[in-house]
Length: 247
Image (cartoon, rainbow, N blue to C red; front, side):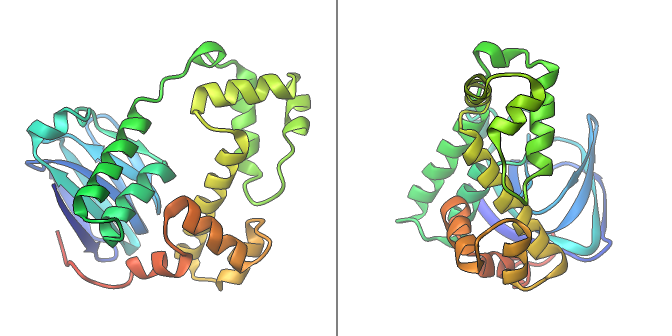
């Protein structure tokens, strides 16, 4: 497994191409639009993509370019971890695992690599069960509400009333579908939204904390460390220090 950090210049374009190895990439600064044979994806900070070997794709980078942490694995071993299908994720679990490999703060590279494989397996193995196998229209409304209220207090009881289900039923369906509580989901989405805002326009961290419902900057810093394994300032530095060029 090889890991590198790659910076792409503002407005750069890559014509359709393939990689010889399977890759897993995390966007840590800027954004891009990637076109494959199956989809067109606009990816920002915190987005993770898996590409099988020989997956044809082209990229257009935003007005500030992008910084990507890329992990490459041989096609043979990678196939055992279901790297056989092109797909994008917004998973703080995967983002944290990739960042742990990059930071080298684990007890040796092998430990960080095992954390990554465990995180990938947990995300890929998530299978909805029970009521969540075929979510009804009300569940989609719940997800929309949670996303729209990412920067403010969330009332599960209030959302349950709006969609006419019992709060306990809502909590059970949510946990069955996503493997975590609503509170955990909201906390992760809030951290991801704050990371993107922090990286996009560079406001003071205290302003970002207030905008996304954290009590103060220290509260936001603790949440970042818990969910992503790094404080906000260090994450911001990942996109500005040019360690690897081009790619």
